[in-house]
Image (cartoon, rainbow over all chains, first blue to last red):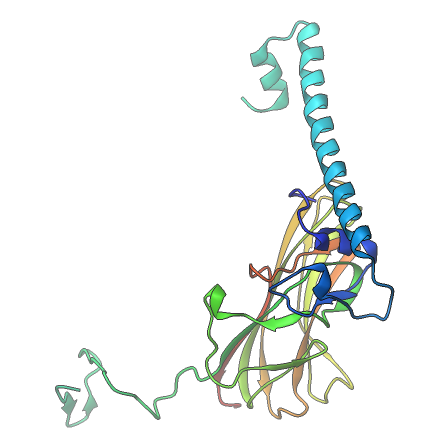
Length: 94
Length: 184
């Protein structure tokens, strides 16, 4: 996901494909208003909560890893003797 | 009008008219409606959007003109015959192997015993890249000759799992309908 997951709907779309769920009141998307369209099982509120937390953790970990990888790559280039300008040049950001 | 500006041979179109009352019989737009999908979903392949439709609300700056469309399981029925401009737009993102995302408008002249591919559009995505965003915008003009049989529905398509983003607070996946005039 592009933005950090912040709602149980972010978890629900990962449970199964299609428009299997909706809300009895789409202006108030709380678990109590969650409805199932396809006759399939409805996740528990705890599963939704845990699922959202997991998505947030995964998102944060990916972000952290990306930042770490970037910093490590820069450092390794510097260790090879490249200047900041040279590093920018090979990244195409000059 | 405070001032009558009629000439012997009709209206002078170079004049300025300031109407303060109601003008009737002059044509114009009589039907405008817009709907949106209020929840996201993940999908691959090509599927009609059949659920979670709602009329675009006044809180998002919209008030329909006229009777408006009716919707059931993703099939939209027109309130009156005529030429209609139909627009379908949505936003999606993915972090899978999807190489393309598409959008389709399908109409029918026999209540979807058969359907007509009225409009489709595709965009390539950055297959394999994480968090690629895509936008789709499709439009067509449809001659609704009978409201009981001439209808429309909307599809999404993706090569692999893609998140189609609905929202109840932002118009991210919308279908709009404007009646342009009478059926020819």
